[in-house]
Image (cartoon, rainbow over all chains, first blue to last red; front, side):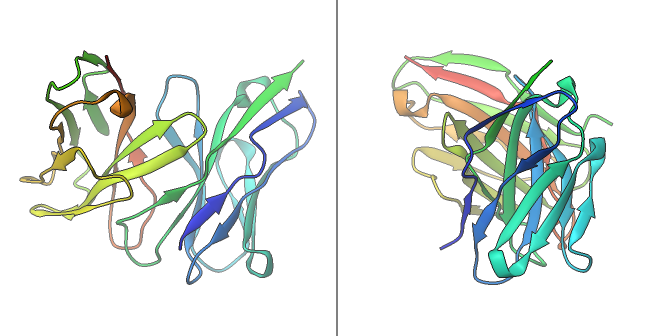
Amino acid sequence: AQSVTQPDIHITVSEGASLELRCNYSYGATPYLFWYVQSPGQGLQLLLKYFSGDTLVQGIKGFEAEFKRSQSSFNLRKPSVHWSDAAEYFCAVGPPNTGNQFYFGTGTSLTVIP
Amino acid sequence: NAGVTQTPKFQVLKTGQSMTLQCAQDMNHEYMSWYRQDPGMGLRLIHYSVGAGITDQGEVPNGYNVSRSTTEDFPLRLLSAAPSQTSVYFCASGGGKFNYGYTFGSGTRLTVV
């Protein structure tokens, strides 16, 4: 069965520090992989996506993610966190070549302290 | 370009009442979906559609109906509201068969008392 695991429910980092949010997935084949961000009271915004090719993908707002097939992981990173990055982050997987079903992780809440 | 528009933003229902959550997109996307978001559970797929006239069930379809008569609209109907349906509902749309990722609406916060 398809599933997405985000093992960290909540993470606190200092502004300017580096960030890594973990995501592991279980899927029958190599899925399409996504990271979304949700600010309080808002909908979800796509940060980045991986379909194929280079396993390090760049997204908006200075985020990047690395796909590691051997570990079934797609971790999100940012070298230097800004206070405005405080939000909820969701990893998602979807079937390749179709667009009809996504599976989301339970999210990681990020707090940024000055 | 409005993207994905959901109405209403907030709603309070009494148990047993019915209502329709509206969702419209102006991006000519083929794929549309409804998710519910509950604390600690992430987003769970309720129903989805791969084009006008075609719908299918997701993970948690019970108590909800959908239809897709046009490309633009994908309403979600609660048949007989229950407190367990208290949640935040998101509509999302995506374009093309290569799954470029969804655009989400801003959500509807529903409370069933």
